[in-house]
Length: 211
Ligand SMILES: Nc1nc2c(c(=O)[nH]1)N[C@H]1C(S)=C(S)[C@@H](COP(=O)(O)O)O[C@H]1N2
Ligand SMILES: [Mo]
Image 1 (cartoon, rainbow, N blue to C red):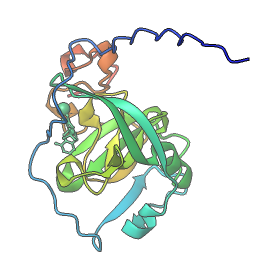
Image 2 (image 1 turned 30 degrees about the horizontal axis):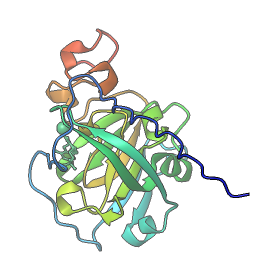
Image 3 (image 1 turned 135 degrees about the vertical axis):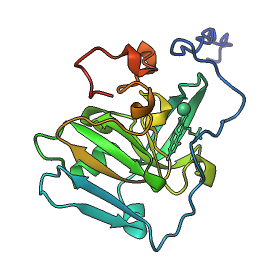
Image 4 (image 1 turned 180 degrees about the vertical axis):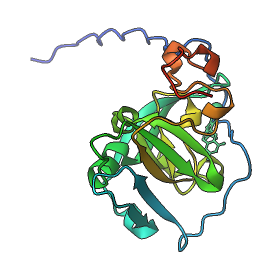
């Protein structure tokens, strides 16, 4: 028997929760230090070195990297200058996949992420393995533009975006934490936006590598 059903009540949209001090800007700002590097596919490689399980470095050229297992993840993107870009659909190679293919030594605790021109950022090994961390080639179905890190950028959505290294070329496993580019210049070593870890003066003594 046909019956007219009243539509289910729409749940009220939940207001987005932003980390403290953040706002949502128009569009997707471009922010970085220095020039945008040129991509030369024949020179490009991705290296995993430092404290690897085999004590040997790993290397993929561009075609090999493009053939690695891929995944997608939707996440917000929080810059320490206070903008948050919501709901980015990232696509790329998960950090955990890289760690499986090029495993760290048992005593590795941290990772230095290296980009073109020597930009770097340090993260914990657990940040590399976390859900949502990936070496991204695409956002919202489109290949990254040169400004946003083409051909490859790291995305670590649960940390401030200076850890989301554009034009990434490799990672170095560390048995002892070391500060990266911004971490040496007054920014917080860990950078959890939900705890508003913006600046190095907020770090507890002895918890992080000295400045
Ligand atoms: N190689 C490199 N990656 C970088 C930076 C940089 O200066 N160089 N800046 C970081 C900072 S501070 C931010 S906020 C984000 C910005 O990414 P977007 O330009 O795609 O928004 O990139 C991060 N990755
Ligand atoms: Mo940033």
